[in-house]
Every structure is written in structure tokens, then in C-alpha cells.
Image (tube, rainbow, N blue to C red):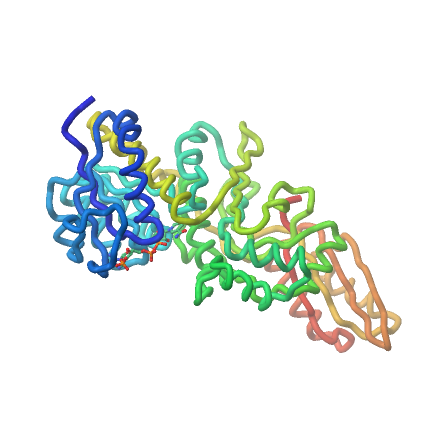
Length: 429
Ligand SMILES: NC(=O)c1ccc[n+]([C@@H]2O[C@H](COP(=O)([O-])OP(=O)(O)OC[C@H]3O[C@@H](n4cnc5c(N)ncnc54)[C@H](OP(=O)(O)O)[C@@H]3O)[C@@H](O)[C@H]2O)c1
């Protein structure tokens, strides 16, 4: 084993960074044996230098992250600050000054992954980010390396623990959205401002990263269709149960049937209770991958939290450390397929639509005609009448999102349709 240590700088020492530092110390011997050289914490950049940080030598702490990454003697920079800036500039500067980078920053990678990969390649350094998607769950490496000989057709996942916790609460207790969110906040599963989670931004960033790797194509955050889950009601769960389904916020990355394009989207969807993703409870994450040769694979585990996320960061640290010692670099960006990313209108799936209609003869026929006129074939219809009003639940066969959108627009114009109570996609069948 080499005695000269690999120098590691930590940018950020919060929920994830403090756990990375702790495990680097407590597992120092094992990490050294696995890498082939000891790792030394060479500096820790934070915002508040006076905060007490257990196990961290105060002499290593600095607020000048830029000076730290410019030192020139660093082997690996671990970026766990989060957000776009200063993380982006710090990562780029670290690469320019000869360090390889390990990051957990999904927002940055989804927005600027291509430029960061290009910088890593230009300087002959590694950029690893296993922790950026689904915390502890190995996903990036399996997609990038283990499945590199296969053809991935679909990635379907629960990649946000906060929203899964809320939806699971609504499902199991009958609670409404706000009540379930309040409980998630009280238990620390939701942040004070839950927008990034409940509006699907966090999941969309992860979908962009997963789609890019799975399909060897650049997929940016802007390419991902995103709908949040704040409109999901207890009534939607009741409808889902009647269909033998539950509701999950899903990230769905798909190759079109003809293989010529891909799509990436995040939205709430009904999935059958028999689907493995239906049994993912609480704040857990799971990702279901379908590929030509391997068939169906599922990756399951804690998608967040300090120690679980640090586990993924340290896995990258070991891999990057080994590369450093052998003078090699690991796989970089693979975007050779360069498939076009299709808009949401071209996505084909099934739909569950709840309509409030007048309870009189001919309404059903009128509604069915609108579906037929837009080329959307109906699978089942259920009608319940009460006091001259009725609710009509239509489940369609597979249709394009554009065709469904046209159908709904036309339905809203019918005198006999009082309102469209809910529209939900049905996935995983
Ligand atoms: N938390 C999770 O469960 C989780 C899971 C997966 C991925 N991630 C990702 O991991 C990253 C870090 O998340 P986190 O939860 O650990 O965040 P956090 O607890 O808010 O920690 C952020 C750290 O960055 C430091 N920092 C902020 N601005 C800085 C600046 N301008 N210069 C230097 N240091 C700065 C903070 O310093 P102070 O300590 O002085 O405030 C803090 O130590 C994010 O990209 C996040 O998306 C987190």
C-alpha cells in the first residue's frame, strides 16, 4: 500500500458532509486498504466557521472554498454544498487544478452535467455522483457500468422520499394532502419549504440524470415534463383502490417503441398494487429498470439522510481514489446516442378520468363519442348517479397525452359535463 495519503477536501459539512467526514475517520483503515492508500481530510469549506463540528479539526475549517480548491495538491474534492452556485464554479475550479470530484448535487448535474463532464474530460479527471440520485441506492454505477452491455428501455422510479411519505400516509390513513404534509414536516421528512419535493423539481432533476445515463443521450432538466402532487386528493386514492391501484409520484424515463426518441417525466400516477413499486412505503425510494437482456430489475433503499447518502459518496471516493492511484479515469459522459427527447404530448399511456356529469339519458353516449373522435379508446366506464348528477369514471386504453388533452378539452365544452374532477395516468401495467 502507498503510504503517501490521498488528500481529500470536503466542500460542505452539513447533513451529508458531516457523515462523510465521520465515516472517513471511523473507517479509515478499511478505506485505505480498499483504495490502496490512506485518505487524509485536507480541508473543510463551510459557511459558518464557528459552528462546533464533532470530529473535525477546527484547523481544517475554512470559509474560503475557492482558495481550498485552488491549492493544487488535492486529489479529490467532495462537493456536498448543493445548489448551482458556488458549487458549479468550485467543481470546475477543482477540476482545473487537478482534483477529481465526487458530488451529491442533483440540481447542478441535471442543469449543467454536460459542461461539468466536459471539464472533467478536458483535465483528465473523474466526476462521480452516485449520491445525486436516490441517496444510498446504487443506481448510477449499475446503469453506467453493470448495464453498459445491455439496452435499457425504461426507468420507472420513486426517487423522492418526502413525497412518497406523504402519498403513503394519504393511502394508509385516508388523510388529505395538507394533513399528510403537516405530519411529514413534523417528523422532519419535509422541509419548511417543501416546494422542491412536492412540485416534483427534485424528482425531475433525478429523472434527467437517470434518462441521460440510461439512454446515452443528453437530457436536461428542461427536457423533463414535471407535475407536482399537491392536487392529489383522498378521492383519487379511493378511485385508485377501486381499480386495485395506489398512487405514487413517479419519475418515468422511456425509450419510444420505435427506439428513435426518449421521454422523461415526473407526475403522480396510479400503479397496480401488484407492481413492486406499490409496496414502497414511507420515505423509501425504489427504481425499476427494464432492459432488453436483463429484463426487470429493482433497486430499493433509503433515498436520503446523512449516513445513507454518505455511503454513496464514500463508494465514489473509493472508486475515484483507486483511479487516481492507477492513473486512470472511470467512465465519463456517454451521450453518443444523442436521441431526441420528445415532448409530453407524444407520451403514450393509460388514463383514469373522473367526470361530474348530468344524470340523464344519452350522456354516456355523448362522452363516449368525444373519446372516439379523438382516437382515445375506452377500456372501462363506471357511472354512479345521485340527485340528477352523476360521476363517470373512464379508464382508457393506451393513448397519447396529446390525444387525451384534446379529449378533455372537448369534454369540458359539453353542456352535460359539469366538470373534470381528476385526470390521472395509469402506469406500470
Ligand atoms: N440531505 C440528504 O438527505 C441528501 C440526499 C441526497 C443528496 N443530497 C445532496 O447533498 C448535498 C448537500 O446536502 P445537505 O443536506 O448535506 O445540505 P446542508 O445540510 O444544507 O449542508 C450544506 C453545507 O454546505 C455549506 N455551505 C453552504 N454554502 C456554502 C458556501 N457558499 N461555501 C462553503 N460552504 C457552504 C454549509 O455550511 P454551514 O454548515 O456552515 O451552514 C453546510 O455545511 C446537496 O446537493 C443535496 O442535494 C442530500
